[in-house]
Length: 469
Image 1 (cartoon, helix red, strand yellow):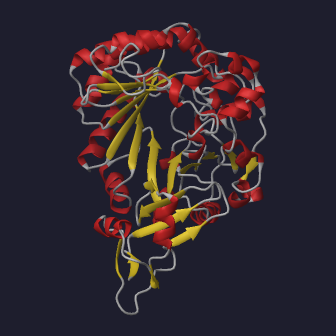
Image 2 (cartoon, rainbow, N blue to C red):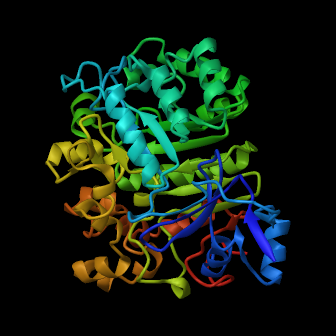
Image 3 (cartoon, rainbow, N blue to C red):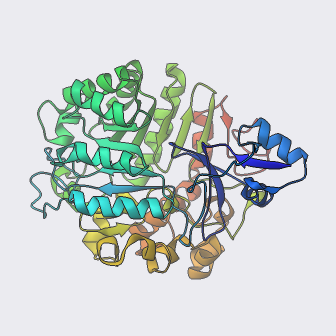
């Protein structure tokens, strides 16, 4: 019996041994077992295979079909890559911005160099992204819509066979015509808009009318049918209005809300004084917000950065610091899965592992690879950047005695490498945020605040910890 992959199915495998399949025209992927990968690679219209339960299952799922006479695969349907796997990548296409945000090194009045990724440079980068098997790009800045060739860049992304996974914007330039243009080229893109609280957004963004512009952009994007995610900074100035603000955003129909602690970047400390929440204050806010949100009846999912995921529609939650239950702990997993999800290319070509850390790489002069100089494929194949992607929990335990001796390490799995840099100077230092979470008993505080909801990642065996069912 001869089978062939359906035309919309693409098989992909990377150096780190991850076999996946994806649908043509989509950046989403699904894992394959080695048995599935091996069998599907034989579904080329030429190679014979014995009928089996696996073949029947894959045919019913729409991945394969019996091959007719002369059937053949399309050239791009099966690819193996020498580089490590990256799901999507951020591209900072411009450092130019029209806001003076108190916390951002891209602010209009910050006096930094105003680099812009030229269209020609971007076309070369997009080719490399495609040739490394990365399907999705996230455009950011600065304010990406201020790039003089923004529309042409959107067209290039589509022409290269890539997906605009996310547009990260302040929303100021999203008028009906612009929204319609984006929708025509990239209907499945996620639009990520910043909104920092009722009565506080103009203050943080240092731009009169920024709040009104953001709300207008949200309405336009939802009317156009986009998936809209909100990024909201939280600090001492706006923590009191965050629940009210989230309720407003829910009324506008947003699909996801992400609340982020405004961290101690030098510009923020210079402009905002003591408005930064301490780690303990941030966790206290998380618990207070979670309890109020549970009682509000609002059903939009909320992610509180490095703290909580709230899923009110299903009455469930997850504590982000708890990566594993004790019995499921493994030392051989990556110290950070996010490194594979959204590394960021800066306008000068430098590539960093995590986009929120870009300013700290600059501030502390941390070593960086550069795609304009070295090429993306080389960086993802043989460099200090790709080596960091391979760091495991075992590496972290070997690197510092504090993590190795900690009774909670089987739960936090070493924490977040980005926060480890902030706490101790490198990826393998202890994550001070997680130390506070576990040692100060915030797991129990969160479970109490969300009493009655299902805990999706309990620290211990089901039925043997607070917050489990």
